[in-house]
Length: 385
Ligand code: GDP
Ligand code: MG
Image (cartoon, rainbow, N blue to C red; front, top):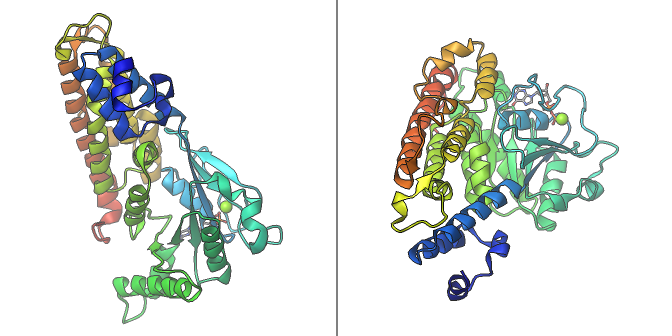
C-alpha cells in the first residue's frame, strides 16, 4: 500500500475522504493492477462512507407566497398533504429556515427559508439572518409580476459569492388565465413571462440571467426538467451523484441519467463485496457476499421510486390503487433475492446480476412513468431537452 500511495502521490487511506471520484477510481485501478484487492476494496468502502456523509444543502428563497414550500414538496416527490411535507398555504407559514431532508437520501436537505420582505426579514439583513453561508446554492422563487425584492436578493446572493437559480413558479395559473384569449398560444405566453423576468434581472445588473418556469402542481412540465439538468450540470462529484439519485422520477432523461450513474458504480460495488482475504488473482474468481447484492438492488428500487413507500405515495397522488402501479413492475423485488438463492457469487456474477437488475428497474420506472405521468399529465407538454 505504501508503494501504491507513494507512486500516485496520494495521501494514505486514512485520508481518502479528500479523494475526488476520479482519483478514487484511479486509486482502485492501480490497486487492482498491483494485485492488491483488499486495498481496492478499502478505497471503495471509504468512498461509500464519504457518500453517506456528504451533505447537500439547497436554500429555497423568495417572497412569502411565491411557492417555496410547494416547490420543496415537489422536489421531494411529495404532495402538499403527504406526511413530512412542508406546510403550504395562503398565509405566511415559515418564520425561520427549516430543513427538509429527502426521505431516501437524508443528506440532501432542502431549506425552506422565510419569505424576504416581511417585517422580520428586510432585504438588507435577510441573507445574514438566514445564514447564507451554510448553503451550497440558492433557488429564488418568484410568482406573478416581477418584484424588486427578487432582484435585490439575486444581487446580494451574487455579492456573497454564492450561486442562484431563478425560478418563476405558478406558470400553470398564468396559462389558465390567458387561455380564454382568442390569440392564446402557450409557447408565446411562456416566452413572454420568461423574457419579462430576464429583462428585469438584466436591467438590475445581472449578466445573462437564466430563468426557469415551473408549476409546482404539474412539476414534470415546463422548464422543471431543464432546471434539474442545469443543477446537475453545476454540481460535482459525490454531490452531483446523490442529487441525481434524489431527483423525482418524473422525466425520461432523469431516469436515463440515474441508470447510467448507477451503471458506472456497479463494478466498484461488486468489488467491494468480494471476500478479499487471501484472494488469488484473477480478481474475477473471488467469492462475493450476497448482502451487497441485496443492498444495491434495494438502493436501485429506492432511487427509481419503486420501493413500497414511494409507490404508496405515488398511488395516493394519482388516485390509483398501489396494485395497479405494481402491475407494470416486472423485476423481482430485492428482498426476494435470498441468501439461499445465491450462496457463492463471484465478482462476475455479482456484476452481471446488478447490471441486469438495474436494466430491469430502469425499465420498470419508465413503465410506471408512462402509465401514470405521461398518460395523465404529459400529453400537452413538450418533451424536455
Ligand atoms: P411559500 O410561502 O413561498 O412557501 O408558498 P407556498 O408554497 O405556501 O404557496 C402559496 C400558495 O400558492 C399555496 O396555496 C400553494 O398551493 C399555491 N401554489 C404554490 N405553487 C404553486 C404553483 O406552481 N401553481 C399553483 N397553481 N399554485 C401554487
Ligand atoms: Mg412556505
